[in-house]
View 1 (cartoon, rainbow, N blue to C red):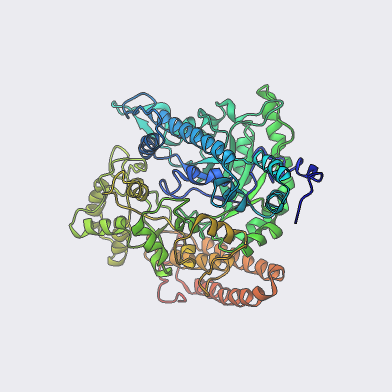
View 2: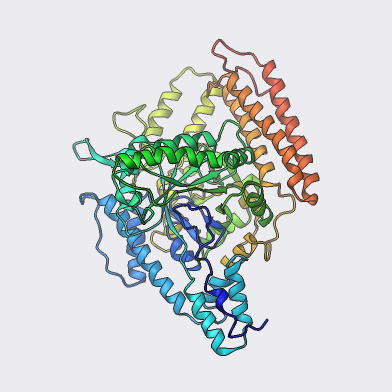
Length: 634
């Protein structure tokens, strides 16, 4: 199509973003984002994708890795660098702030380069618009390409350049990883918790973006956040720093949102993640499935906003502050999404504003950091190669790729009778069971003491073996989740690598370019996935059934002591979810309905079998299960 030079006014009112919810967050043009993955996999992702308008999340938990990355990129881009030693006062805050400021400045420089690059094949500005989702901006770009009038084409290009915006440089904090940073005398320093110092580094940085809070409530952290002006609006401007909560159920979102609103802190986005169908730490709910949870958020969205506004306005008034307009919220979803059809369904059925794509991006070297050895392992991974493990020292189920160099090194140390790690970073040193100072459950110190205790105990053989296996399964996540980027950038080629991929990695079978993955996400050129891949909702349900079965086995070995009420409530929650999905299936495409319903019926039988077996189990006086493994369904 040819554009006439007199017909260009319609490009003057192009929206600067696609967000229409009046949230404090400008989500940009793209309908997806790249969530945080480990400590190293997305540590520099904004430097790779922000210039294309794609938002991503950096973990700011590991200031040691962050300092290594700052030194590296200062050298790459010829920026001044002064090492911040650990002994320096507030070193952790300074390291995090300095790195975030560097990333901010580098992305700003990238955006200037993008805007000044020519509209020609392979240029950054061409790639920017080619990866845009369908909509007004993409149509304007296509019209410019089709334009044959030279002066008009140049004018349209100028107008398009003015619409170029960077993707957000967001950061993540695990709220529960907040142990005190100790002085040499062993005393804690006020406001020096790991999460608190990371928060301070972000809050005092130049970034205008969001902090993603995951892992639940930390009242001390919430109170500390209220000390920073950047989280508050002014009469004419929204907050410089905005808040995102990652949650797996509505009740948690309401509780945390209320606690923050009462301090004058507005949660601009609720990032709803599957409890099990994810990567990294899996915060399993008591059988609450993603579909019903999203449905609950959608049904209560208006009341959630109005209820929180009341607390928010009252808190701001007490603080002598005023809101910037009437803030609303963004709803996003993540966890196991693998096709554009699933993403489109989340948009149409639950009215989410954007969707997180995590694990598939581990196969995109342009976006994330995976060294060549583990790219090959991820490309070839089957369901037998990915497990929901006991590897995390935090005691939270953790998704891991098997047979990584981290796993090989862990098993080698066990074989040499020297299990555990040296615990050089100590971010997860929180356990006080066997020592007067906090230690990490993956450390040599803890494992030596715990194994000695278990071997001397009179526990039944099976229970003892299970307990020993759990101790030995712990992995040094602090070091090994940074191993891939250190190897890839040749910063420490002796590092061991752990990969926190979710099960959806098994749907993909090769390395992809950034454009290939973006085109797949938007359905323009879908990637060929494995044929037997289940729908994301079916996979999550299956994972919850397996999780419930494993909990029964742990109870039978007295490794845990969950009540029969817990198992009944869990099972009933799954059945309610299945009932909801059976009704919801009518909204699926005709070609998907039959397979979805067939899988649903099969999984329903498994849940019912678990319930019937509960009645057959012998219960002790505390209601814990004594025998289970012999009668559990396969």
